[in-house]
Every structure is written in C-alpha cells, then in structure tokens.
Length: 322
Ligand code: RIB
Ligand code: CA
Image 1 (spheres, helix red, strand yellow):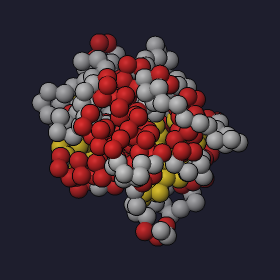
Image 2 (cartoon, protein in one colour):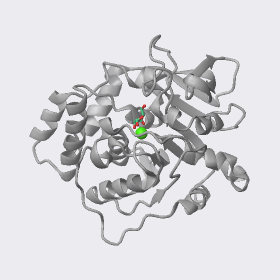
Image 3 (cartoon, protein in one colour):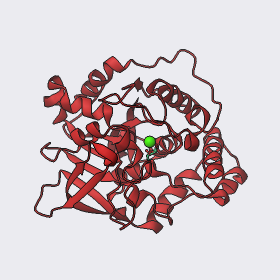
C-alpha cells in the first residue's frame, strides 16, 4: 500500500503495559496510520523495560524498521514511583515472553527531542501527530525545552489517554479515588501539556469514557482469538495479553486504544471544547477537572462520550485481524 493512502503519521509515546501494547498493535495495523517512531515513558513500567517490550512487539510483527526511543525514567518532580503491577503483570506484558531482535538498539532518551524534531521537520507542518498513552513526562519536556518551541509548531495534534473528568457523572479517578493513573504519575507534566495557552490541538479521553462498560474485552473474546483460523504471532500475542488482562479483571477496558481511535476516527467521539485543570497538591494530587467553554479555541477537546457500537467494531475488527 503506498504511503499516499496514509492519513496520519504518528509518533507513539507509551508505557507498555498491556493496553499500550494493544494500542500499538492496533495503530500498526491501521491503513490510516503510519507509525514513524515509538518513545517510552516511566509509568506502568520503567521506560527502559517499556522500550524492550516495544522492541519485542515490533520484532514479532516484523516492524523492527520503526525506531524505539527510551524516554523519561522518572516524573518531572520525583515522587514515589507507582506501578500498577497487578494489572500489567510480570515484565509489563502479563508475563508474556517474547524474543528481542538481534542487533536492534534502543535509541537513548537523550535523543528523544532530536528524534522528534528531525521527524517533524521531515514532513509538512501539521502532518505528524503524537498519540500519548502514558504519563505525559516526555511531552512536557518538549513543551518546556526552549530549543524545541519553534518545532512544536510542526506538530499536527496530540491525542491523549489521561485524566478522569466525571462527564459520566461518576468517574473521577482510578488509581486514587480522585486521580487517573497517567495524570497521577506525573501531574506537573499533565498540567504543562494541557496548558490552554499552547497553540496546539490536543484531544483528551479520560476514564469517564474509556471505562465504558459497553466497550470492554472479556474471556469470550479471548476464546475467539485462540480459536482463530490461521493464527499468527500477532493474534497469539493479542490472546496472551488479553488472556492475562481478563484473568485479573473478568472484563477489562483497553483505555489506551481510545487514544488511537480518537486520532484515527474522531467522529466516534463526542468532543467538548474547554480547559483542563490538574491538581498538584494534597489528597487530590493528579485530579483533573474539565471546564467546558464553547467560546474557547479548539486547543483542548475532551471526549465526553463514545459511539459504543462503532468503537467496538473498530476494536474487535483490529483485535481479530491476523
Ligand atoms: O488509567 C489508564 C492508564 O493507566 C492507561 O494508560 C493504562 O496503561 C494505565 O497504566
Ligand atoms: Ca498506558
């Protein structure tokens, strides 16, 4: 397929983690997305382990051509590092053992902004976007790097999984009752990246949408995956990752997949304009508040709902595709 068909060129910023790994594979499969590079960030796992996990998945999918960069090893303001081990299992991929490619190197975190700058400037302004599915430490460093400020204008948009805005009238957090994990891990970074004065379009989908009980994977889906005719390594990996996830929680939400869908198919989402406040101190550290404002620019769009049927078609067609 020639690249001319591709609608979106993206850099993924991830902390794989099971749903990050699934989101990465779904982005790689998309006919509308070309993945130009993947950076990892401290979150579900350390950024080095995240980079190794990413290398293994790319190798399994025959995509070792895609550069992998190790990003931040800790949040902007070092606090206790938290790891939701329970959900992502040993090694961050539910204990899945995959082989590392031979001579593939992880590009160092020192070169992350260089890589992103050279990638952005290899294309037209606005042609390359970022999908961020972990804590926003790497992205915040780009925003606060004076040498990068002119390059920021080359970015198309950023599609972010993070926060919990209570737009379903009940979901305000997960990791603590007030905060979602990605924002809780680095609230200072979230505050920087979501600054409404930045002249850059950012779409944010929080737990209030990604935890939709109608948009889950369950053991039945895993059974379908394992019975697929002509299973490939890709479907075996998917079945293993989801098999672990549903063993921990009978039905699970693949939060990070929503950030891929929100870039590729924004029409699946109801998006509201406004601004986001992130609490930095006290028991509500990491809490995210959305203040709707139709008079505001398009810089910050927050998902308030998803078309469940269309999203599930998107999700299952990708998961079950060899
Ligand atoms: O709160 C959901 C987010 O945290 C997702 O990015 C998932 O990977 C978890 O770590
Ligand atoms: Ca993640």
